Image 1 (cartoon, rainbow, N blue to C red):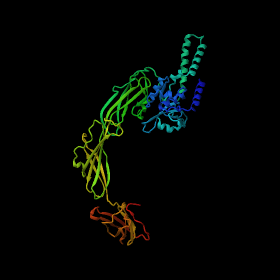
Image 2 (cartoon, helix red, strand yellow):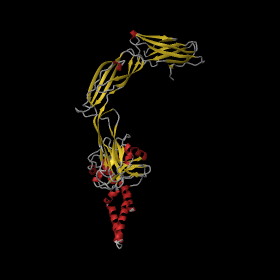
Image 3 (cartoon, helix red, strand yellow):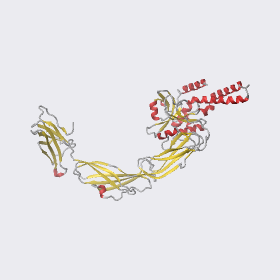
Image 4 (cartoon, rainbow, N blue to C red):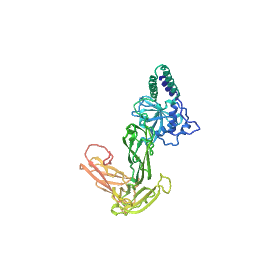
Length: 549
């Protein structure tokens, strides 16, 4: 028997060097069909990729679906969960379900060809031949794989292996011949036990390791073994925003023997989520109930559905269904604008709503003045279009957008925040947002305060104030406060001046004040400060903004 196992493993080693790319005239198969093809070839089955791809009529597959299709074609497999995947515990070859994104919403089937303590060799037969085989570290593999896999069920496939079956038959016949002189009673007692040992020994070739394996199927092999009193739940119209709805279903085992859950499949994401990993490793006793949570994506507006299929190791799959009609709340987008001082400020406030076609269009309720204070409505415009991510049909969801033009008279220079509340028809509570207005001078200085630093008493200290845009020299008056003299530079982008430092020690302050013709813009006052202190020969130090480096 040991020689048979060595021969079998050696044949796998030779086969692992072969390629698993499809014929050049054929397009690359889906990951489920490609993994089935590579898996069967590694186990010595004479199949081609075109044949295997014809077994599947859907590209959205689960491990349960792969197991069912292979069983229909005479190949029995079982789902197992490796508790701590590493080079000593994995079963090879095996079909793995790995996640493409860390959110575990997009999956992909690959084949684990072989492994050692440091690396695992992955075959992705859906790729071209040159990129089909990849070596990865265990850390990389565990980050995308939680331990569920599909392996060959040797207990059921034993009689499909001609070489092994022939050897077992020869052993049985030899034993029968050697024991022919004994009483029939003894022979009937010995031969079944020997055959049982032989079959059990043959199953060892599947692999080894600590795993949550699927027990042998006995008792109710077919029929209903799981039941749910309410397998379909309709939530009706649910108003949500960006949250996820979850509904608990209570499932009970009605089998007369312990069960293991082999596979849990969700129609919205194609595989079991991480929250159900513990269920896959549990043994469900007869009469025991367990709870599963079915999520419902809320990014869809209108009718939405999610199905969960729970497949036990024996018996039929049970299907749970969650239905709802998703309705969204209107959204008021916060506003942050900047404006020049001395001018009327216009604020576009947008209210948007993704609604079902049967819902009324977005419309404001009567607006109370205090809810918009200090703003007044200067205009209202609206539009309604089919929602972009849906097919352009008459019954498709609509995207409504309502724009309010709000205006306010002159605000002081600085940052102002205004909480705003609006009432929308059909919604009992008002919707709130914040309008933030940054009011700046039309001629914004780069230095709003100028600190000259520590200066010698009775010295002359030059300074410069720069602006973000060119100054309008006509009608512009530059005035100073304190011991300052200042004028406009030739480039009209800065002011240069000189400070006559006082003789008295301590802090001093002055200011440069800009006045504009006919008060088109408000006066702009820029404080200039410094500290008088005798420090010997300090040299000339350039001024810098107060609080700077």
